[in-house]
Amino acid sequence: MVTLRFHQYQVVGRALPSEAEEHPKICRMKLWATNEVRAKSKFWYFLRKLKKVKKSNGQVLAINEIFEKNPTKIKNYGIWLRYQSRTGYHNMYKEYRDTTLNGAVEQMYNEMASRHRVRFPCIQIIKTATIPAKLCKRESTKQFHDSKIKFPSVFKKVRPPTRKLKTTYKASRPNLFM
Amino acid sequence: MPFKRYVEIGRVALVNYGKDHGKLVVIVDVVDQNRALVDARAMVRSQMNFKRLSLTDIKTDIKRVPKKRTLIEAMEKADVKNKWENSSWGRKLFVQKRRASLNDFDRFKIMLAKIKRAGLVRQELAKLKKENAA
Image 1 (cartoon, rainbow over the protein chains, first blue to last red):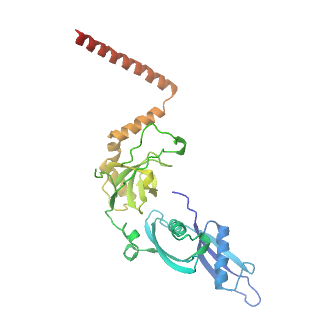
Image 2 (cartoon, rainbow over the protein chains, first blue to last red):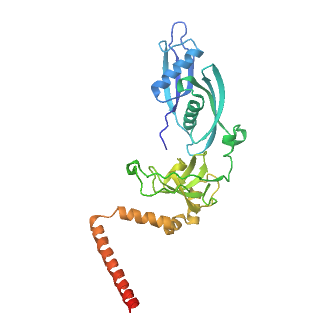
Image 3 (cartoon, chains in turn green, yellow):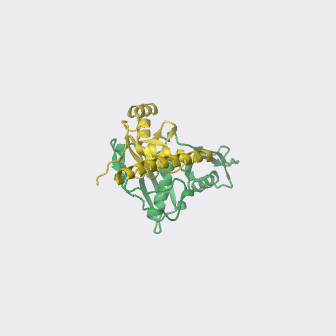
């Protein structure tokens, strides 16, 4: 499988203990980032908006990567997100079919970038969930809920099996029909 | 010209690009328009883009997302391996691989064999020409 860019991390942190508060409340967040360092940074970004704590007066207690439990099973993922467009903030709900949650999140970021020109920093994932097939809302995911799915492959792209064998000129025209 | 080979559950496909190049896999489920969940006896079930697959004529009889054991049984029942090796496509690939793995001595032997065969053909041709001329 292709290496995915986004990893899911669980970050646990709290404010530093002080005389006023001996045992500050511990907060846990699940978020997506490309690496652990960025995950911690995003954690503080979100935590600042929720509590009066910054990285300088707080500590990360644990950061673990969350891996997909069933990467061989196709699931329908629903992603709720909040994004900043040129004119303001909007909420969105999007559905994706994929085998892993990280794959679906990557699809989401790619789609938001292409359809709405919204980049990674301007997107906040509110919630993700695996949706059973009955509750899917979007036609583009529902059309694959067919146990006897069958469609022809219309266009065959002829490719050399490795990029080493690529040549500029070919002796004959390729046959594009499957 | 209507389509004869469909992307469907149970269709056997040949991987034509990437790490698993040359392997026969069975399409086990369809993820979305571009990708299929694909499985074979010797590999972990994974998703693959349709662009990496060439559909074959062989089809196994499985339900959506079968267990690995069921899949292997279905592949045995449909006799995928034998059907592939006896098909003209399968045989051509085998010959290509054989030709690519020759060493110099093998190529020498082939050269001798080709010369011998051409000699025999020319003998027969000369005989037929003489009969015709006569």
